Image (cartoon, rainbow, N blue to C red; front, side, top):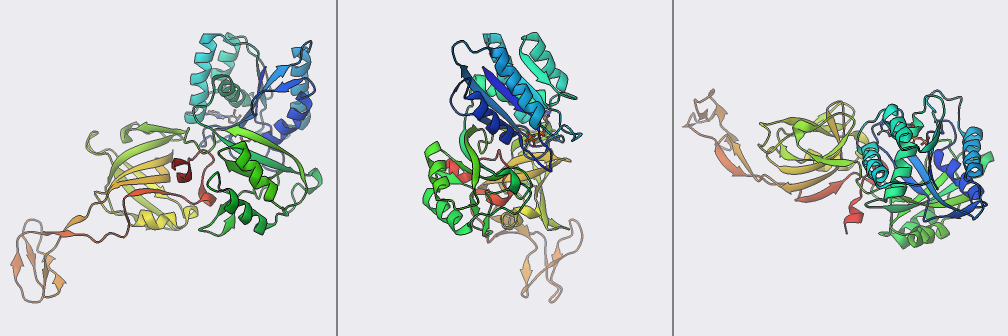
Length: 418
Ligand code: ATP
């Protein structure tokens, strides 16, 4: 039986992963947990999300003689008792997949990827559940069925790429208080296990980033490429008592949200990989955000999109500020209000030439007007044309990414490319 769960928490407390962690303990009395529980991040641009748009799936081999009905009731009761029903925006969904035809698998594979990349309606999930006779329970407006079906669909069909996260939870009486974590031990765990773990600390900004600041049950999460690596880091962390912990398999840090596309195909609230040329020199706007226009490379009659490195991306903005018109780049990120929020950039080629007004008497000549050449303000001499000059560039070709403190859950860090 695959159990999918979503949308149980509020900003003030709880977290669907904690509900899953508690549920796992109860389920162990009824069977064996298969593989790892799945922590799935869905489309990061969904307005209904509480925090990171997570959904969970647990795969259970029922013990011989166990009644599936009893297990389903246990799951539904746990959601009923732990979900924050008072929160308007909390609409839990639970899905149970017990058997699957090839047709159902194929449909769920597509639905689940769309839940990570696209914007879906509740009715689409309900229609699939009904048509394939999949047992489920939706509470309130039932929006959680979208995430619950997507997570269980990915548990059924498999993830094309995955990583691991060990999440440690806090004792209940500490929820909402300051987290007590020894920073030195976190730096030591990071040094001992990176590059097999990542995003534990942000070295550039000298910050521990693996612990949230919200009043939820999570103490910290360690991300890495194997159970061994995250467990090794975990064993080195000194902190307040850990109430329980779970190692999840996850689509975090895999870029599963990104779709290769042309600029003229882009829609708001989706995430893309776009190739193009820098059209205009980057501008710094109020708030310290850096923005430039990206133009497609000729295929689409000059379709253009604004790309932004927002203030929280800190030092990454220095790279973006150095871009010049005609640089060829690939940008990776989500589009909101017609602006792509850059998560990563690959600078494919740097434009090292620029047409400039000729030099004379140690200064640039002034344009006399369109098509009328250039004149030196000092000696009065005139030249017809601009000159092609070689530009000094302060950046090199290659990949650049935002720091860990600004990384989105789904973004694949460059450390995973090695
Ligand atoms: P939680 O820890 O409770 O899961 P969260 O930040 O992950 O918190 P949710 O509270 O689950 O966010 O809210 C997200 C809601 O959006 C869920 O009801 C989920 O089913 C729905 N949802 C997720 N992905 C999509 C999508 N691609 N299209 C439409 N709705 C979606």
